Image 1 (tube, helix red, strand yellow):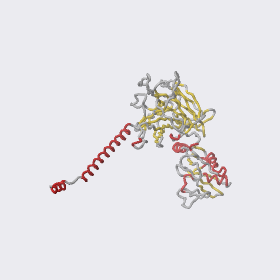
Image 2 (cartoon, helix red, strand yellow):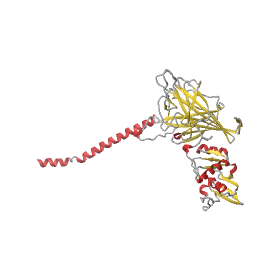
Image 3 (tube, one colour):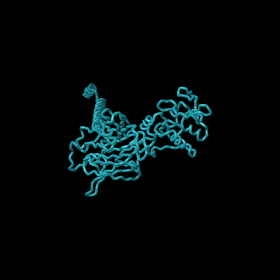
Image 4 (cartoon, one colour):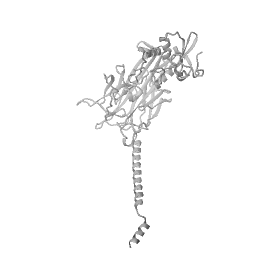
Length: 455
């Protein structure tokens, strides 16, 4: 019988590497060898016995990360390459009995969902040329579970170039046109939940749709430079421009339908453009099955609107043009904070931008810009076909990036704090001065005696 977590005693060790089984129980594997039970700390050691030692093993099992019970390894769904610690390898491998649970784990901690056979192949790489397979997140390849999103900064550039006329709710420069030409804006496709370490995408097929301030379709131009796909579109007037990039791929009988959405607000001084009630209307694209609409704030009364710390954000999720309830919507802040909420019956999800900027008083910058990424996730079980390939279900993901600045209250609180500190130091100085002066001043009685003696 395979040992359970309760049955394992402190001395129970992996027969291959000697590591304690209870310490690495979530990655434990088990099998039968000549009718005897064997238990290993990881799939790494299991593969070592099967591949290198040519040991005949049957009835292979793995611990389900969710229930902590042993399940049939060949029917399990492995998440490979997550942020969680690995066992006997540089690349982590965790197993689940449910595909949905594996996907949820990969969304929270990265990694790719794959079958036992594929996880076995990954474990084999640990033994190539006698060296373990290393895994660098800087060179991480794109998987179907990665988030795709727009960035106004080139992820391949070491230093961000900041400008001042247009913004994804934050200052990014518009390319200055030649005399008589129309100004253009460039947006890059990136991936990775860590916004500060966003990575480039190159030569990935996208269906692109762009809309101008009047919600009319625009032409966009695709170019690939420095391994980054970028899209250029004209921005002749002040107002909101919307860009949508869609990618569809099929893997393991699942259609991955990913949409990257960008709402770009251009605000340039010295133009005749006037802000009206319809200037901030959001584009509702009926050609896309899934969409996420940012509900406008009452304060949006100009082309220079920005998000600030403490602001409340509301989004409405749509599926086939109707409110999408009980869907997961996650906000990722560039400092690493994240939060997931469910949409209500009206498809609404609400967030508040947290304070993530804590500089010294002398270093406070009112123009400090943070970034956040909103991701909508939804799955349906409708079967279909794409490019002659069949699929059993669809995983929808839509991303919406934006930026924000420190609120005025933060700046004022820093200012009040500085004033209070100055007053405190001033009063303390006066008190110390008076105290020292009184210490050196002769007493009245002593002065009287001195005068009397002189007479």
